[in-house]
Image 1 (tube, rainbow over the protein chains, first blue to last red):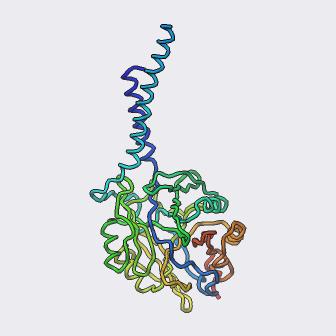
Image 2 (image 1 turned 120 degrees about the vertical axis):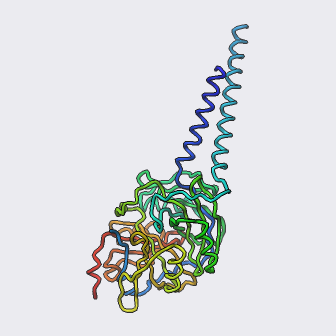
Length: 57
Length: 303
């Protein structure tokens, strides 16, 4: 393998590494307290969710 | 012998070249993982989605594999290792599109929860407004990507939320998300009046009364269009919380599946729960999530 080909291969790998990293939209997992009170297991009452809900145009 | 030496010599030359290439790849991979999070000036990228839109959801859980099994079977979500700034981050995908993540948290007293991220114009200023308003700054602001500023905060009522400077590369055309995608977010408020005031100041939400029935009032929070619902919490919790919604085709059937998979039904679908179009469930680790059919026939809820 010639030196030129070697450098071209290195540059290609470097480019691929950067590309794959840039494609990743996720990875924004963050620290947040997780020792809060659990949600209850009972129903909140018959009228609580009668109204409301998502609204799309 | 000369041929053998030549063979070995060539092999060694190739091996040295290969080693240099591998070393370069390792260096760039490491640099890519570590360097693209510059901590200097805040990024002020132009948002490709409107402020006030929730664009990402992270599940914080002590048992990632159990969560993957649950959500994979419930919604058909798939998972892959993510290159996040936290080790062990998992990307959630639905039909090939990234829709959220899973953050592993160690500990014996971990209550799983979904952390939702909302787009704001200025992450740093908004984070400060949460602190000034009696809330807390848990992490950041920092650059998770070269043009992605993030922070995690809680308001004075204890509701944790993520702040991001931009959304993912998807169109924000107001189209209703597909089934098994994120549909909506609600703020379950301990003190609705205080929450409306604070969320207006900090996140720029204007609000209006969506519907009211007896003593129950459902508020709509808007930026360019309705983005969030808000109502007084019916649960005896000390803190308020953001509740993410997933669109489902059949809430009753999905809620039954939740139970089969080890979860709990918190609010079962019924005639007076948005006419059977809504169920609120806990996943096996205790994270609440709402299952909503959309569109739904609200008129049938009239007593």
